[in-house]
Amino acid sequence: MAGLSNIDHIVVLLLENRSFDHMLGYLHLDGRPDVDGLAGGEKNEFNGTAYGVTHLTDLRLPADPCHEGPCVQEQMANGNGGFVSSFAHSVPGVSPDQLGVVMGYYNAGDLPVYNSLAAQFLVCDRWHSSVPGPTIPNRLYAVAGTSGGLVTSPSLTAVFDFETVFDRLTAATPSVSWQCFADNPLFSMLRLIKKYRFSHDGHIADLDSFFHLASQGELPSVSWLEPDYGIVGNDEDDDHPPTHIHQAQRLVGRIYNTLIGAAKEAWSRTLFILTYDEHGGLYDHVTPPRSVDDPGSSVGTYGIRVPAFVISPWVAPGKCSKQLFDHTSIIKTILERFAPAPDGHAPAFNARVDAAQSLTLLLTEPTPRRDAIPVVNTGIGLHTFTGKNCTLDGVRAVRTLASPWPEAG
Image (tube, rainbow, N blue to C red):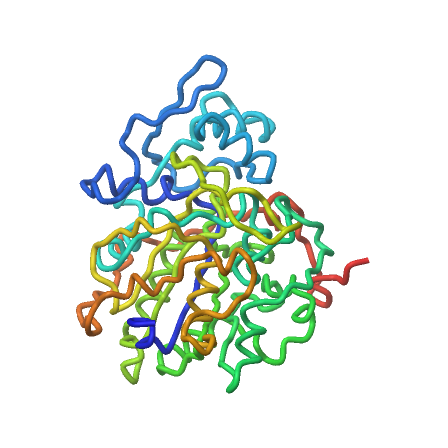
């Protein structure tokens, strides 16, 4: 367990639908040869036209690219050469001059919070989404290590009866404290799991509670954070296109600044894992490798790379990990730290989790660093805009407050 034994608080935030090259590929262009990002010559061809990677000047995308399973298969074809064609085929009315937007990327000036975190902590450039598909299958993998073979968005009445990492924490002797903190607890993704649909034994709280507990140095062992998905209102900060990217920058900055300023020196015992559920149909140049899954649950390969940060005083500054990770690495890390087998390693869970690499090897510092610098959201203002019209991965998600997740019929 090594460095992981120094961690008492694991905080996890999964944002929405951005690829590694789209958000962090600029690091290579800006003089980080250790990061497998963009070289500048990457391109896709469609209808005889070459579309190269280009810096985006608009901080909101004009559309939400398709990221359902069949679309992702088209995107991965010919060495990740189908992103533009998928965008053209799946988004009605997209104009020819907008087709190249899926090849676009943001840079340090656009992403001041991420640029600071990349310099202070550790970036993973081989963190793949778990499924070549949309949000819900990937979020199922993040908590349960499987989607049951699902690679498309389920119906809004879908409910899944998978064992989760949280069940293992509750069943441990003694039980391990954990909490899901959601911007809107009614719409927590944990409610897709049958036992948490309506009854959650106090384990689903609002995000304001997280900030209070974090500032007091009183977080549970595991804190699972969920942003505003834009289901109600227009304050969406999950980074799901076409949301303005500064919304999520402000959220991440607030979380990080709260953690490093926590009372009781809690920061010295904290691991903050920040990544994205999937790539959102946006270009990345790395072909996903084959995956391991239980029979009947296999989806064949990992999904497209996503941005990933490992943020802790126990990681070396300004580094980039080349180790293959996916969202089940989070489960592996949590179990290894808080519910280990008698030999000290993570207990058997399922094929994907058992094959995953935990984050233990990244916690290399002999003592906790005390040089964390707060991020200053310079240039990041408050943006009022119209949200996604209450959609979640292309599926209308209009729900009543009385019954946010109706029972499967």
